[in-house]
Length: 27
Image (cartoon, rainbow, N blue to C red; front, side, top):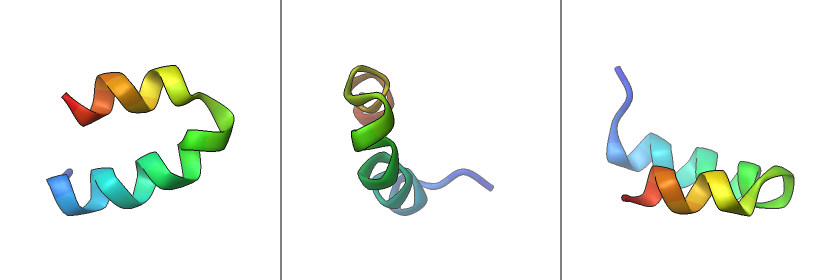
């Protein structure tokens, strides 16, 4: 399942690809 912990790890990787999407995921 998609957990906040995984979201943080994914956001770090996606931060370079799409920082804008990371901001939405951070919500």
